[in-house]
Amino acid sequence: MNSQIEELKSFINNSNYTIVITGAGVSVSSGIGDVEHWHLPTVLQMSSEIILKTMPKRYYKAAWNSFLEPIFNNGATVTHRKLAELENEGKIQGIITTNIDHLHSIAGSKNVAEIQGSFAVNKCLKCGKQYNDINIWNKGKTPRCECGGVIGAFPIYAHVGQLRTEAEKARRWVELAELIIIIGANGSYYWSYGNHINKNAKIESQKEFPQEQELKDKQRKLDSINAELKINDDDHEILGDEQEEKDDKNKGKNSPERC
Image (tube, rainbow, N blue to C red; front, side, top):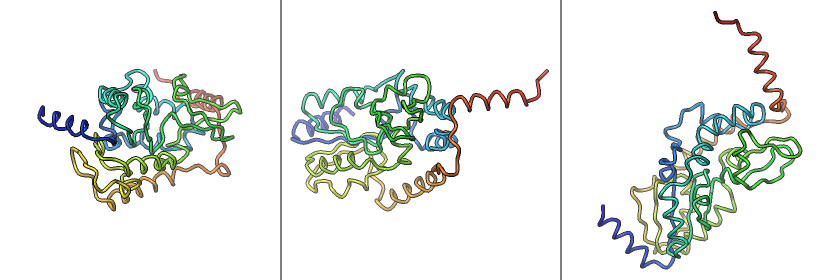
């Protein structure tokens, strides 16, 4: 292990342009599980614009348990902080991540391409106003716009899509890269920038990325699930927190009392 670390240090020191690609593995020690180990109902709730709009309390509870509590209470991992330190020293030029936890930026990294967006990229689902601040999710409830609409993070209103500006940034970076280091990533969204990687770049990874078609097949399955969950404002009444609370009370009244 020590020899591998020393070899990696040597690669970094000899590279003029180093890009790091990260995935869920770098955030696991913060308490954020990777998608493969999530509880399916949680995955569905976290991907559902319907639940966010009609049951914001339920949505926030799922988001808090899965992401927000680890983000705000545990914070960045040693890996996040070390990468920020290396960037500050000029040894890495950018980080490409599929993580939506924003922990690289919280750790202090400045050049981060969040290609699936994050809880720091938000907009009102009613009027469209942007709220690009992760701290609006640390208020104990689903954030609301001044117009009264609920605010959703990019992975929700884009249905786990690709944030175009961030993907374009990632492509520019890998075209210039002399060294690419892959940490805790399984290859998700590799197809969005993989074809742009400098053919002369050295790539250091713990394991090989899946084949491009395999990645597209996985993404297609996820997209189909999200398409089923996509809300149509013409077909669903938008309920606020007050209505949701009223419904909860009514359910309690109608439920038989326990002895």
